Length: 196
Image (tube, rainbow, N blue to C red; front, top):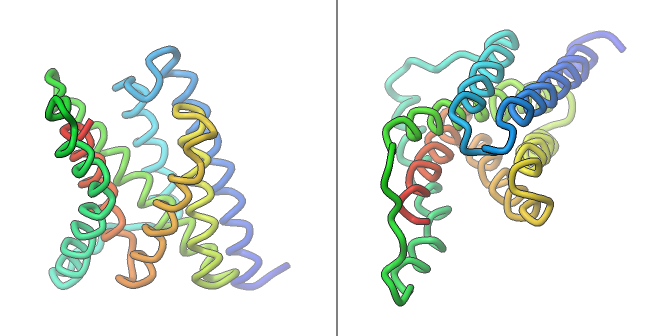
């Protein structure tokens, strides 16, 4: 198959293979520390960033793009956090606020979230969009997003992560680029520290 559709399908397969390799590498490096491994998170973020960059994903620099990304992204992050906020407010003990190295953790979590979005809702979404259209592009990125969480959190999280991935895909389609999903993903992950 030649032409833009054939190239897009080939790009999708290469991105998915690279993504699977990056997930495998993260699991291997993390070992028993699982998702809490700072080193594994940094390597994973770097690998995804390299893949996204090689596929041509760039950070939009226009101010209007930033406005289009930040408010919708923060709104979706708030929606993602709402169940945890309600649970924390209704907990008999007031919930649990962990201490420790928030700054280090926050830097790594932000790097991972942005890299995931650059690859999944940036490069992979664009390739799937060219080949199959917006609904399929959202679905492909959402399935990859759900799959990446399985090694650390188990199969029982697939439904939740698939739903989150689809919401991020809709945000990508509505705003026109991957930065709003990156804002939503990063903000929700950073808030999770305080909402556990």
